[in-house]
Image (cartoon, rainbow, N blue to C red):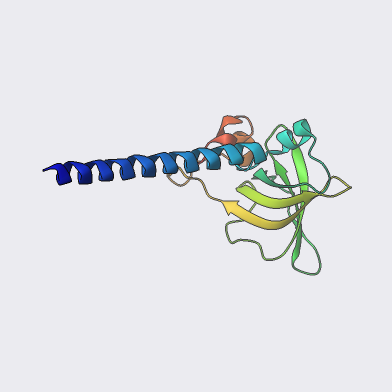
Length: 159
């Protein structure tokens, strides 16, 4: 009988140590992420201006593609457009193949850095689709969405 108690105690000690190690690892991951700011999914144009992001600093830019701002250069692979959050807008330049969901009035997240001219030079562009289903024809136009800034931040935190 004494051997059973010892085995049970050993299992209990092993389980307690394993849980403590996992909790410590989770804490360190969260702490390191908060220090580096890596939990920030993207910055909107107004946040870029508020935080005075340095030239050359890499970050993710998100918002709506401004209606009437998309232009493709003669090489066929360079695009220039403006990303807006209805409070501010930022010019973006991207060379590459655009995602099929990319279009004016749609959400976009791009990764890159600001150049000296204040243009966001993207090396990655991801077109966002709306997470909420709505029947066709019931969604607001880009101009109507800008009247309601909360429509832009819905889903930004991944929920």
